[in-house]
Length: 249
Figure 1: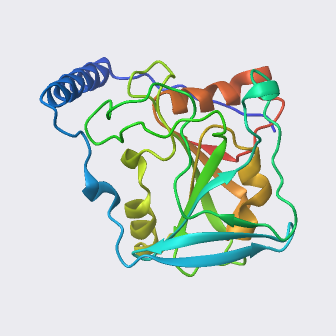
Figure 2: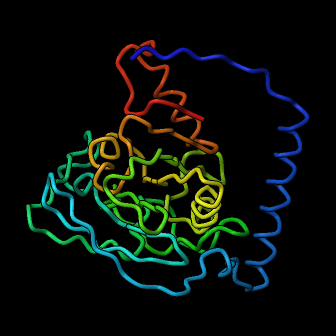
């Protein structure tokens, strides 16, 4: 798959305002921390009418138990690679394939990849409390009632970094809760499946059909360093070695 890119000139005024907004947010976070006030906003991830759902991947015979929250089905902490610690440290990820008959508990968020532990770095973001080298997992959100025959478009989200240094962040940050997007898209008659990963895409393409997604209609979306990662992925090897998605934003 050869990738063609068209570069658009960026507005220096826009980036100046973005930098100013980021600086103000950072100063506010420092002030709230100094005052001993929590930098967390529970309304971003309210859970109401919570129930569970179980689906089975007919190809692997692996089951996934998720949750339903306000007409959005969530499956979290689905590992696509082995623990990156020990002998796997600084090596390419080793794919993780559960044995047939395994039931995956996908009802709670997974660990963030190694980074500092502490209060939320910016307003609206999550405190960083659960960090592990066993972090190569993903989360899926889809409209309630989706099944394996739905063949919905798939949006793959690569999270950003509030520092701009590729040192912080996770697909489980409350800043990126997908419920509003999934509900609104469904209301508009354009339902989608949302996938957020702690970085890497191949597992989505290979397994999303069991969750009702179309593996030939995957859109990679990134913010900050997530967007940079997508761009580097597309342009590596002159774009001639293929990518595990069909579109990018």
